[in-house]
Image 1 (cartoon, one colour):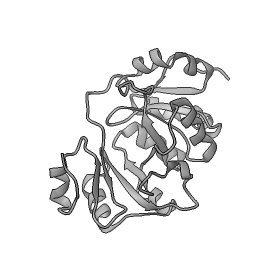
Image 2 (tube, rainbow, N blue to C red):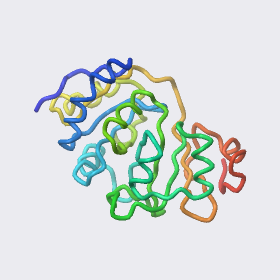
Image 3 (tube, rainbow, N blue to C red):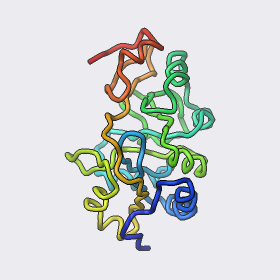
Image 4 (cartoon, helix red, strand yellow):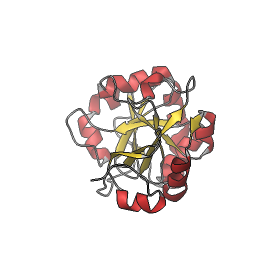
Length: 223
């Protein structure tokens, strides 16, 4: 099936709602989405192994470099058997929804191994993007996520940039682009590993470590 050679409007709530039926159809067939988030544009899809493998192929992702999961409510964490430590729970209560990614333990038998990082955990973020929240709620499961760019290139901040770089994949229907326009410049999400005794900074980002320590003083690592 060929795709729309442009993007699918994804600005207003009516546009988001109108995009959902075809987007669900695309995901059921293990297709890859490009979508706006609260930080940069992302690529992602359903969490089954076939969809994850399709995402690996389009991103040319090396082994050992996983994807994160975007959620729209805390019940999705429970359904996947992921575990919020006391520190992770405090960070989630303070900073979710928002640009904070928590690496959580658990999920054995429910999350494909390709989504598990070298620390053994699963990276999760409750997105604050309203359109994406609506879409994920309609899916009923998390959406995988990685930055929308080719290897060595910066993450895309606009639908126009994705159209220019991924025109053939969009035309073939391999990639479905949800057009949220041009995003404001933003740092990526801050990533905290919550699988050990003390939470540890993996990647600094939009929320400073100093701000995070106001909620959880024993975070390890800084920049």
